[in-house]
Length: 227
Image (cartoon, rainbow, N blue to C red; front, top):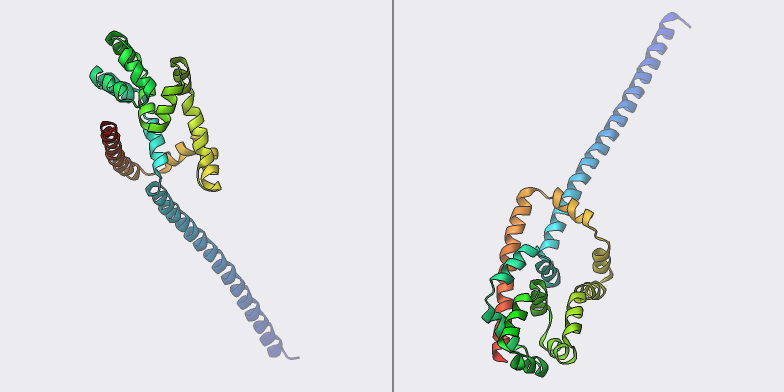
């Protein structure tokens, strides 16, 4: 074999080897780039899905969750509202409570006892009783319970009501979410939401909450007046 043939064969082997190496490098580089692009794309899609999911969850929160939030408003606001209610409104509410026992008690109690009871009634107890109890429950409880039992049940009502609400929440998913969501998860979600979204949601929620509360109070007042 002459030298030119040997030289040409060596050159051909080198060119094929270099070509194969370049192809392997390109394939690894393209694969890594595709994986990186997929990772970023998946991350962005997950963030967008989470944003939409959070928005839909906030919009679809049922009245029970809103009612619970209204009940759990900080005690200072509730205490201030209860303190500012004039004694005549408290007396009228006590007089208008349906039930023969409550009516008989209100008629027989002297004005000093009524005034003292209205002033000393715990503001949270008054709000919970007015908002959460329907007329049949109030009538049955007022007729059947002495004053000590009324006080004890009103204090324990919150825990039983919360437990019953969690048990009756439609769907295993809602029940599991209500039972498993601890304070840390709620805190982390609130911290991760950007401030503008939180502010806007809080403002919208406050306006809806205030409007719904005013409507509920008006409807209860109208219902009581009709009775």
